[in-house]
Length: 412
View (spheres, rainbow, N blue to C red):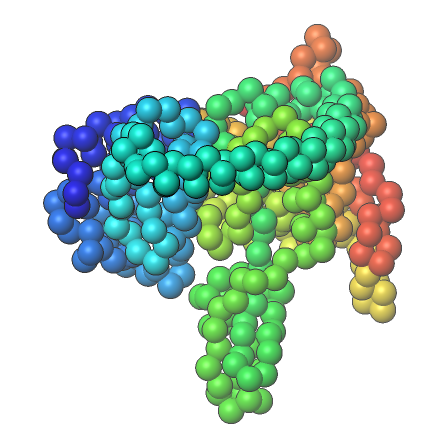
């Protein structure tokens, strides 16, 4: 390895204690695990499946083909190591890196006085190169100054969109040191090699696919061809909603992450603040998590499980089969505590893609936010931390053209 074990351990401890790693327990554990394997001479034999079992406590049934947590987190660890040496490293004598294409950490000594020990002609050439680099740097600095001024102006415009009501709605996400993860709901499609893609709206997991009459008929018509799960698509409303929320939060939070629901791990649900974008049926974690909810999205509308006086028990979505891009539907905004009461979960969605987009508008547009906060505050002027809000959405050509508050419940 060329570097003493004691020095490696000390450098890894320094990394783990750095600001770059302070908000990510999963990457601290992964770094320590890969270090132990490298120092033990076992890194060359590491496999994705082994790391999943040993570092992420996956069950023996874990299949890397369908769960990419190891690849995802190893990639982020690689980025964090690079970020540390680009921003925090000061007097470090060992550089830790994770080359692409494997799981073996690399440990290199950082040269300290190589320039003084070099021959005179080397020093002269280096001096000339440094002078040229300085000229180029000055030119680059001028360009970057112009770009920075423009970027700050645009960021200032976005920052000004924050009003007190938006501040109060997003306070739990802004005040935490945990990363905010925006999870984009990805429905299950069926890929038929050489033919294309097919989706039965009633199926969202493989067990439902095997029972689907529609998919069975399609396969029969194609002589029983092989079918594969595919999670590469999402709705236009979901994509627009993730953009609105990420753009807003990025003016206040630097650690905004984005993932797809089929790639989301339970470790991420436990470690991060999560914003789920899309119907619960597109986010399997919401189906499995024991979340207390008074109001739920059903295939044809919104069900009120605990109706209060004057509230509807069921709100039916209405669409015209001859005009599928137009209708009157409903969106549900739910904010609840995370797993074991830790962190926050925010869920935006309905049965139509436009519902998700409309829900995001209520949480990102200052006027909408002000109207929503007025509804949510109690008689003492306090805003509940956890709640569910139902919004009616009228859409045309798949775009919400009108949305209005219907009712809400406070979730204790």
